[in-house]
Amino acid sequence: MGNDRHASAVLEIDLEAIVRNWRQLRDRAVPAECAGVVKADAYGLGAARVATALAAAGCRVFFVATLDEGIALRAALSSGEDEGKGAGAAHPNATILVLEGAPRGAEVEFVRHGLIPVLNSLDDVDAWRIFAGLLEARLPAVLHVDTGMSRLGLAADELASLAGRLERLDHIALVLVMSHLACADEPDHPMNDAQQARFESALAILPRAPASLANSSGIFLGERYHHDMIRPGAALYGISPTPAQANPMQGVASLRARILQVREIDTDATVGYGATHRVTGRTRIATVGVGYADGWLRALSNHGAGWIGDRSVPLVGRVSMDLSTFDVTGVPETLAAPGCWIELIGPNRPVDTVAKEAGTIGYEILTALGTRYARIHSTAAA
Ligand SMILES: *Cc1c(COP(=O)(O)O)cnc(C)c1O
Image: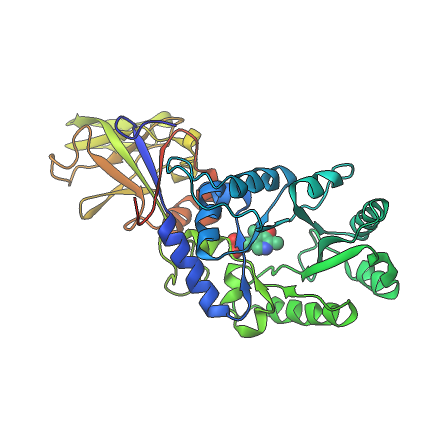
């Protein structure tokens, strides 16, 4: 991680905006509990910092993907060390739920670190019951039922056989029954109602427990989808949960890159690998030190853009490993000189816009962000 004084690119993460986004979602779904999904290092933005900020704002439940993410998050929340800011409040009682569940043989790690597995199959249920039985304990777990993803979670036949033999849940304290929506970002998609109905049927045959169905987009499908807990990830990080409408969330990540060099061209020339961009006549090409090795996707080649001052500057030629090139011909020279900044993600370049240009989704743009940026986590106090 570079020092931002000479870093060629700076990634700034607005923790206050994440907290405001969390509060907005919480208020929308109250009295449902609002968890925070911080898997994949909080979508690339830094799980320790993000979860610490959310916990301070009152978030009590966090979802991670893997055991290792859970162990790291527990350490971060227990230490009360807010990196770079000295001692902060510790949040040792935060609930951490692990979406991939417990790998066989690693069950003891869940007890050791105070993590709760999501049980995604009958085999998972049996393994967790047997482990809890050996400890002569009743151990918490989340039960995940599949209502239409065909990915993780109990399939319909597994659910039926569990409901017929509920003693298979002996020694298990069900803290949550959850399912996951496939098409929540398309409000009119018939899958939403179908999954909601299947989820209700599952709840009706299982022991009473709090229920959770909605991811970010699911929250905006309406109150019926909120159940007892909502599970936003993307919307916390400024990705739009309602792609067909204006984004109700605040932007969180800004990425800016310094211009390393400006090439003045006054003849015919081509730019970059493959000579895919051709210039004719007077053109100024600015090169910045951000490339696909930084998660600035190669798919942005000849499709992306940056922002200088009050105008968009097209990304021309191919994105290379460490460098990208922008046509800054129309920009005043004082704003497009070596050392000047180009905004790649930010208020003028929302993450969803970058995603569209790259032919992907905001989730991939954020989780791909590389390790070479100088990272700044800004707070209101800072
Ligand atoms: C990632 C994930 C979420 C969060 O989804 P977003 O669309 O980012 O809000 C919620 N639930 C499960 C099971 C997930 O895997």
